[in-house]
Amino acid sequence: MLTVSNLVVDHGKVRAVWDISFRVDAGERVALLGANGAGKSTTMGAIIGVYPISGGEVRFRDHAINGATSAQNVAAGMALVPEGRRLFLEMSVRENLALGCYLPAQRSRVDERLERVYQLFPVLQERARQPAGELSGGQQQMVAIGRALMSGPRLLLLDEPFIGVAPIVVDEVIAALHRISSEGVTILLVEQNVHRALEFVQRAYVVENGRSVLEGTSAQLLRDAEFSSKFLGLD
Image 1 (cartoon, rainbow, N blue to C red):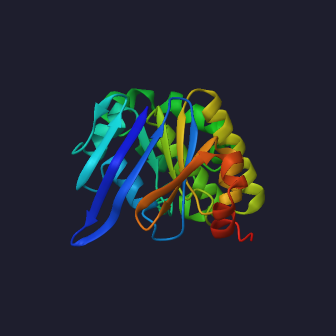
Image 2 (image 1 turned 90 degrees about the vertical axis):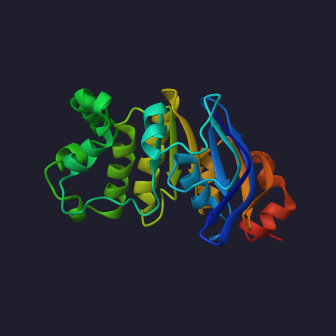
């Protein structure tokens, strides 16, 4: 589904990603783990087309997408839930969700896809006419995920989806993500909450200083002494 090979990304004269490689197979749930500033969010931005790729290659569904715009990548079947949600807080919940169907070929399916989002997150239907800024952090995250789903993605990219979300709502969000995964959507997750991430994903890659340094299944990483010491605080 997605293959990232020796990715290099620069922010102006500053190199943010030096050499990151990983793959996500169709139907998988995979995580990128690492500390703040490791290059995880930059990697997600490069995949979706927000940041230009300086080196290496990104392939989606067997096609190289270096240089593709975010609109082209969304049309191809990719969607990003950005860190910080980035909602239009003065617009209603429904208006924010409908923005996910902005491509001309998708606009006729707004009502159908809204119904699916409301099935996943019933509270959003109850609050559809409220400004998004009046919702809790967890409910705003549901809107951000729902907006991404409105484009009907085959690959869902989630950047720090649990930040600012109450633990009980995190459980609800994870349950919805399991449903999304069970319906065939492939998921790539960036998350600092390592325990939560490894409970949800099947495999993970560790990113450090802009480079991928470790990979394995959730069980393998939890048994790895170096990983446990660095990311779980265990000696």
